[in-house]
Length: 112
Length: 239
Length: 116
Image (cartoon, rainbow over all chains, first blue to last red; front, side):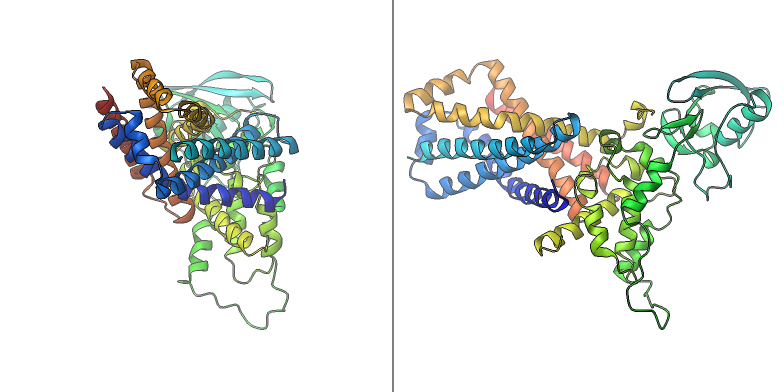
């Protein structure tokens, strides 16, 4: 990949990282709160069903996590293995898209 | 002290080789370079090593001492010896020519590749350039300018070990001082040379370079500066 | 060519980078599994309920605690890197590393106390 491409990936990963810093803090707080109250399906669904703010948050969160993780894995693979050609970039893109879609599907199912 | 002996093991050979044990009398204020010199003059004249100024200016005597890259002329034995033992090897991440001498060619070649040379701005200077000492650029350049090119950071860098194409801390630090030189006109080429995965974006901030630099420079901070400049250029579509 | 000696790597910033990398890899691999399990579990309230009962298994709880610690450690380490890259922090590094480690362990303990 060109220097410009690498610079863009770096920027995208840092931007997603800044977003995630906020989102993960919220996520961790939610986990602690939810677990403290005792996990039950009814309680979770009561919080999430029809809650547009919750849905918006998790749509952004899932996409940012997939982007950040995908670029990170690509970097690790390039450094640790001999896999560095275009197929790795395509695999990275596939990981990001599929993980985002899986996350959106889960969020949508909890919303609907 | 006078009768004490240091147990010194020294790398002999090239990339293939072995550690050879020597016994060297301990002296007060003795440096690791003194120890190597003693071996070469008194015990084995075939030992190859490199030095010039002996006072921490030329950057030619760096070696791996007890596992850590150091300038040997300013490293006191009593600070690094463990139970009167020292292990001395050539720098890591460079081909060994013989014994303690490495081939520094790739190291300096990367300074060239990072556009580490001053490029005068196109208009011929009619007067001295006035660079206020307190200006942000001048202070940023000052922070990295004292590099003596010893290769300690390069030999301590994990990313150099993973990717032989990576420019490394010293070359990128040099590029950062030039990016901050207001008289320089070569920054668009330089930025293209230092961006990307063989350049500043490969740095993971392990900070071994900053920790080991004998001049207490902080190449990690210089590389972070390059990342910020590259990010700005990327957003403006200038990279 | 000589390799870098392990003794040269024994310093706080190096360990912080290692923790960041290992936690990052594990979290990135966990992410698709997390989404997949969630999507399957929420095919119905009963299904989600049975999935949640499965997670009451102490081993699963322990794994969850490890994940929470990994997430907290990666978050704290990430803030450190952002500070280093964008705010040009220099001297406060060791303090930042210590704070990161402390905060992530504290969060993990919180989680542990909550679930057991």
